[in-house]
Length: 130
Length: 300
View (cartoon, rainbow over the protein chains, first blue to last red):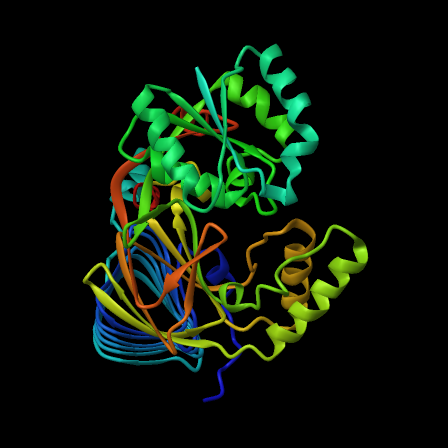
């Protein structure tokens, strides 16, 4: 199978790396970051950031701080911080994230729930003081 | 008192040329001790065991990676510290500890700064860095001996290049920590204690796989190997961490531990509770930051 040559700059610096062509069955956990460009049949949980490369195909749930999704994910994604789905990214599953960014061309089938920014009544108080 | 285990064949008999100078220097530094010579493979382990039984607290391997590994296997389970005077053909272990020449190793031995590592085990064989499977191990050993002359090194490089270009990657199945299994192909696979490569890191198995390198990567890798007798492939494509690992390859492949061929796949590798105390360039606490570094989670 011809491998797409798209690489994500962060892959080289990530703690756990999984190259294109590598197939994993089971649950993958990391105390740091994970960058995956291979196939995973199982859940992925990281205490840091997760980067899904263009060649990656993941059948399982993802839990991380920030998620950059450039491959195919069939499962739910939970990110405390930011989730970015790039133009090559495809997510079929529910997404729960702090903030969300979706590039033109990305595919997302599922529901999404983002954290609402904290509301303050400071402006009202400020205007009252004038 | 220090106990020096010398491998007279290390570095093509390098000890013969430096013996007097070495003994004088050790005496001047106040760390002269008992010298013994190995007589064959495995002898350094036996001598190291004898030394710790006699009560020596500092056992110094005078040789290359093979000698250090043997000494380490003899000291396992004891509190004695291991020092290195690197005179071998491959001195990866010493280099990783910040020791590049035998002259530089002497004041470090006298300073006796110690870092403790947990050992890895492949079957009953202990090691720290590193176990390799793949091209490096399978490479024809007649080619793997680079002479000291430029012409010999060029010949070694040419032959290695030819072998590498036609080398078929190995198909492998890895079982990691009973959590997950990996199917992959690799050019080289190496396993080391992460802490040995990064003193700030915890003791863990660091599993690195490299895919077939391109021409530039291969040239750089082989030239460094020829010139320095040991350089890692700089294009690691897969990096995993574990406590336990089982490697199966198809076909079965040779395993090299600390530059010595030590069996064939399948092989089980684990992080053990056995500790080894190494004399190195910096003490362990010199690497530690004074304030706790916030975790990524805390920063977000």
